[in-house]
Length: 461
View 1 (spheres, rainbow, N blue to C red):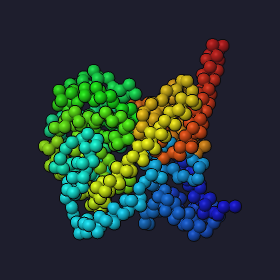
View 2 (cartoon, helix red, strand yellow; view 1 turned 60 degrees about the vertical axis):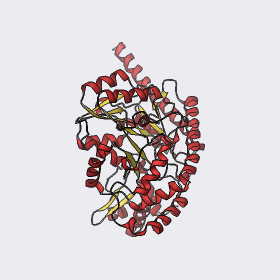
View 3 (cartoon, helix red, strand yellow; view 1 turned 90 degrees about the vertical axis):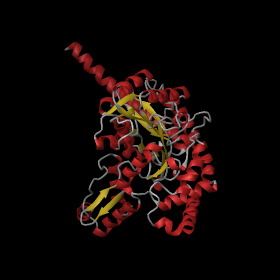
View 4 (spheres, rainbow, N blue to C red; view 1 turned 45 degrees about the horizontal axis):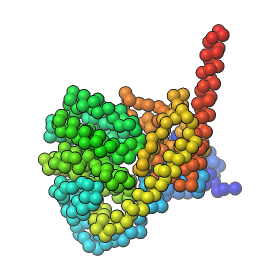
């Protein structure tokens, strides 16, 4: 029989998996749990301590214990199939190499790393970032780069700050990255949407919106879109930039997975308007170490000072230690070597996932077909909601993402699932999709049976 503290941990993890507990939920007191499980308070404290170590919960002095994040499902052996987590493959994170770089950074920079540093980012890092960005066909100078504490910080600042065109509204693809939607909601900015599918967007509709709706900037994920996995063609990217120039709209290009693109001819939008119409964001969270919280933004010269002013009100400067270590990691060539490994890994996983979807998914579903990246989306039959599938799969310890949170209210769809290949084991992909397909078929057949029964009753009534 397992120890009581393990039972308590299992109970809490189960409630996380089925959605009973959410981010910020307060957990029962030590006394309440000790009475419920008929065990000592020390046993409950041990369970809570272990969950804290796993970063599932956190303690607030004189208040109690709270859930960190409902989306962080805990892996236990091979029983969990995780299509939910969107961080890098944990087996590919270069912990040891980067530890060497951090030690060298401390030795090399000493005082500079532990005092206030350049608000724009360490100049020596910006020099290395300029060299690295050249491989992505982004040609710029250190003076136009700002180091930020993750791409989310940059997006949040762009939502709130004025732009040189003097316009006020924002346009985003639908669906889109939920972090951007959260920032928009927080700042209560008027936002328009444009529908995106694997066939792209309606460029005539885009021109209409640019012309008539006072658009400050258009937020775009041009490669391996989150959640769809979509990538724009070269001609589409050129046309979008051309329209932005014509109607004085800025483009905020989030190229977070650009490193994984197998198409060497696929350049970012920035390359078609290097003078400043396109603002380019490059994060290291998905292809490297999420906890590093480092990204870079390439800005038009006229926007740098104002952006730094807004950033100052947020955090003054990003972690100097992380910046120093990243500079050494880039300069040493370690990052280039790391990218070669993960590029092949994620391309292979995506191929396996697409083959499984083609083999197992019911004929009345549709799925996106990205060439690489993290995300593939499934459009469910009209009778099936994403929430139903998520709930049924949770009971089997298979985790997928309901993408309804990635829509503005007026565009919301309840039948879109997002699957991420980043942390799922290759050997589990086909099994996971097979079980997913079974769930869809089961829910769909139940709904059809119910509808047909009701219709028959109505006819005979």
